[in-house]
Length: 325
Ligand code: NAP
Ligand code: F7E
Image 1 (cartoon, rainbow, N blue to C red):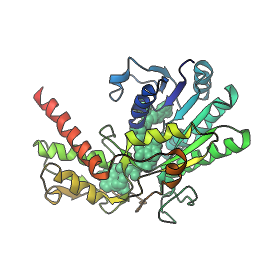
Image 2: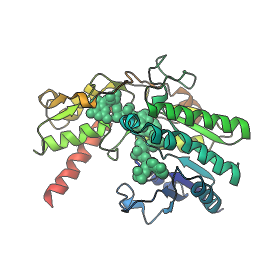
Image 3: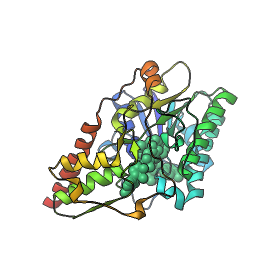
Image 4: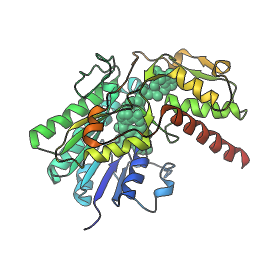
């Protein structure tokens, strides 16, 4: 049998790189959609460039997506591409709606026109729960998004459900809670902290300015979460799943552990800066992953403590290498 083909949008992002590694390990042909850029720096993919194929396309361009699906004829599509940084969604709300919301419809339309049997994974988010109406949040918890990003993801979620029900498509929505790694963008709070800790430890910075230290998130490891994405597309029927650890921690907890990992006291370095506060905050997220555990046989394998340690060690190591040059 020929190797199955998977198309990943957002392959240059954190999750895209881990998913590409995982699918390659399962024997897939992996094709990644990237948007046109004046540089070809794909820092998260450098170690994979010989093993994957990159093709050009953009979530804003229907024709590029339909043509790609028709040319590649994947068995599975993983739609990870999005404007994914919550603060940017307030400064660029229309663009966020175009990428993160309408981009999903464009992908669904492309699949429907070419071959409605192609299986789709849509990257939905715990940000859809926002001002959460119940604790913990499960597949049946009503949505109450608190940012233009969250609103766009709610649209992406429901259009996925709608196409599944309207056209009998194999379209799944994975409602993933925050997942992090040494490949996380430096603007997200976990990586901002691990990178900041490494800079302070190596004498490159003196303080780490943060926003709301009381916000609580259900943080897992991205390398674990991409396995749930794949498992959703191997089921007999399409469905939606919460993917989370079931544990929650505050930003303060993350900072405390991250500084402790290099024998420093977070209180000596962390400052609070109003510029990192949000117009509307998501105070507490904690997911109930029991459906994913029961149906997908998925389990998070990395603890919160291991995640913090892994991220700090990776940033210290990376900066040491740079300093030695
Ligand atoms: P990320 O690191 O920010 O990556 C986003 C990806 O989307 C990048 O590859 C980016 O390409 C691509 N992209 C953005 N706009 C595009 C466009 N117009 N056309 C084509 N590609 C475009 O995000 P991530 O953390 O890997 O997350 C993956 C997905 O899961 C996102 O949809 C995110 O919203 C969602 N999600 C993430 C989490 C989490 O905790 N990480 C939780 C729930 C849901 P460039 O490299 O060209 O910018
Ligand atoms: O913020 C607080 C901030 O930007 C987490 C995306 O992947 O996960 C991510 O969205 C919390 C918030 O992630 C700073 O106010 C404090 O309460 O790391 P974040 P996020 O907004 O939860 C979801 C599931 C997604 O889907 C998104 O795509 O940390 N916080 N101080 C800070 N946040 C940042 N960024 N920077 C600070 O200085």
